Length: 220
Ligand SMILES: *[C@@H]1O[C@H](CO)[C@@H](O)[C@H](O)[C@H]1NC(C)=O
Image (tube, rainbow, N blue to C red; front, side, top):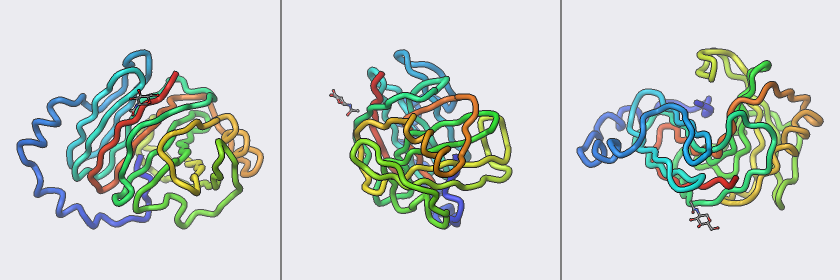
């Protein structure tokens, strides 16, 4: 949640002007923010104040979402608890010109960690300003490893301070298989990045001060 740390709220003023009926109607179709299970998959959908998110769970492990003038939202389908697994996914995600991520996203507790394996991002590279700790090869691609620190920010246990661990794929893609064990092992080996007890793991879409859409499916 909220990982675009260095950005300024440049579009906040514009966001208030769009509350047209069609968007309200679209929103009425979607579910409310929260967590649950659907078709045997865990899902989580979170947003802060501002804008609208029309998030819908679809067939099998799929979801579709359209977000409009949000401040920050993140959600998707996966597993809870989310121990290491190979995550195959596919879908449509074309938010390259807006501030957004497509990422395998999760949390651990003790230590509290928020992690991202970023498959594609839009106008903001999440590794901007962070120190690279190493690299990982996975499924034919190279990912760079980073760590960032969040202080008094929203988390799964309320407002807290915690580390974010990152793998960021150099060549963006939408669809493939992520061997999460490989990332977790290399984070520890190359960056001394420790994870805790598995909380949830989802194939997430995230938007920050943007509008966009996605249809993503994870496979069991
Ligand atoms: C994912 O791929 C399967 C075919 O392997 C297809 O049936 C399904 O519609 C795709 N899901 C999405 C969200 O594109």
